[in-house]
Length: 179
Image (cartoon, rainbow, N blue to C red):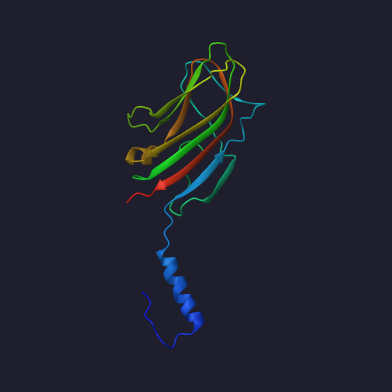
């Protein structure tokens, strides 16, 4: 708290108010945007049938101007990072192209290691069939505890038939800072 002194001038008062406001500002939320630049429609990532595969993202284009100061990165090029007790909103965008006649779905999930089962598993279907591009928009709210903090979360994809994947993007937002 700044003590009032009647001898303060306007600039001194303004400086004291600015200092008080700065000390009160705590930015707990924020986001990062990570776009893969390796896999495109001309050179897609290929997912084989019935094979759990890490979904790649080389973070070739990164926007981290809005991440909280205490977060080094939300995605390190291999895993989605986390701090024990944080809440996250994770969005994964990509384009999927089934390339085999029997391809009807893909599954997406997070693996945090430590013997935990797959987290936030979701199935995306292909109602239009082979050769028809399908946008993937997977968004889930998650919380991170000690295992996620220690290992990060690896994004996996699995399909019941061959699929091309490209234009991969991760947007990760911290919605809650651990208390």
